[in-house]
Image: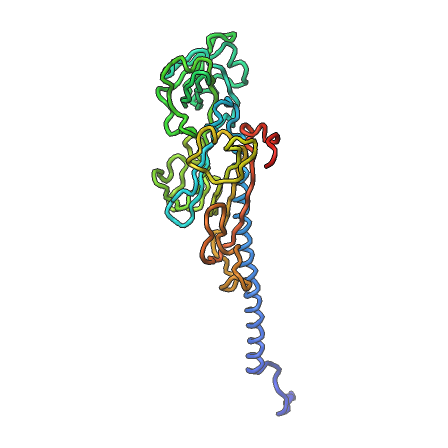
Length: 368
């Protein structure tokens, strides 16, 4: 057997330590670059998701607010238009932002408007004209536990409406002896705008009046998540420090409409001085009389959304040589802007609604 001898100059194939170090360094740079690109892409993606969420919250809340504003006073007698809407300007909840509130009333969700034949005011039984219930498609059981407002005859001189809860309705076959039966007392927690809630002094004031399903809705922004007088988890209120939630309180039940809301402002326009010209936009004035409130014809709403977290892709400072308002709370209506940037991105949406039942002659007033 012969063995092959290797030349002393021949080397085994492989990598030297220097080559391994250089290769490892190149690989490390490539991995770090890929991670950096992924991290930044993920950061931008997360921030864009926050912007999309804030935009969706603002749009959805604006839809509900403007829809109900247009329907304020629906199904109610024109003589009670002073009580269709009421506002509150810059409510002080403690922090820097002072949002508005707007309360409106109407027969918005389900139509019902029946003439009253006899009602004694404090009675639990109300008689309506024969064949009244047959005008609507609701079965008798549908009226159970519904809220109604009992309005007096406008010619009586009384302007107190009773909000009652229906226990059931009764009537004979053929539409005779039609009656509403109520729970004792006024419905608790439901307060129509303008202080309308109450009982007329004379039982005859309601004869010839009307009875309707009632929707009292209040749109308001919870800035702190700990609103005084409300309990977390009760009647739909979230609480527990969950701030920035826009609510619709419908017949004393709180419905959270949207999160990530930073400011909610409302202004009103109408012919307050009755000179056939719209006076221009103004926040709610507590000095407005009932007659002036009845002349409100347009409502403008601002909803300001803010991302849940601050942006980190701006490199620690706002881009540009001057402050960019998108990273700072802007001035809206009569609420001031923030003094400094906080790197939260914002989305502001405003919309104007004609209150249909208060602006039927809007286009006959001349100049806007």
